[in-house]
Image 1 (cartoon, one colour):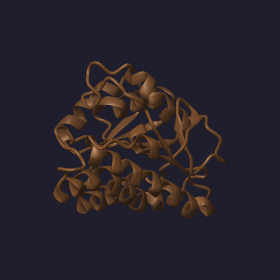
Image 2 (cartoon, rainbow, N blue to C red):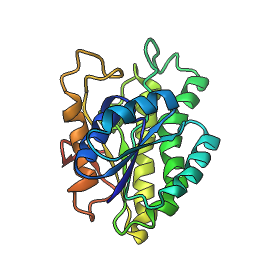
Image 3 (cartoon, rainbow, N blue to C red):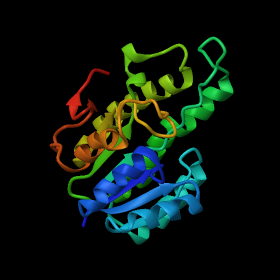
Image 4 (tube, rainbow, N blue to C red):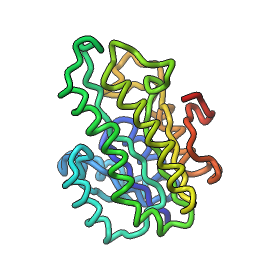
Length: 229
């Protein structure tokens, strides 16, 4: 049985990705900041397959280190999906964005994904064909940057850079690293007017975790197709 760890999986796209992968026979490890919310997600998902909880706050280095040490009871990690993210830019533009807001957004959206990959690398190396999937955004594309979504756009742009560098560094270990955009999805983050369902938003993540060719690495995908950085 393959194991997947999905951060921020107690709701939204992460939750739906977890549901689909559990149904496909994965042991799904839900990464959640709150034990209460994480346990609720586990109970809801257990009917789909094998699901466990790992409490982790990706914005906090100590929390990531503790989660990595606790993961030793599971051991092998076949897929890491860095899904946790925040979208805090309402009412802010690049002209009013504070340094503190930038740091806060990057701590979760960029540094968190990098540090999770670093911390869980020993477990990924035990898999014969490990995969890392970073949840980015069209707002992270060079031609998608918006002055009115400043910290989110820049954090996802930097996350794409992290993807490229990790792909290069991990190629010798046979570990693939890709970014993906789920599109604008009806979640707490995306809002009720978004055009895409959570099932559609999760589809590319599920594909990258299961069916995508292992040789595909260092790329950016949307709807299972490669898109421009």
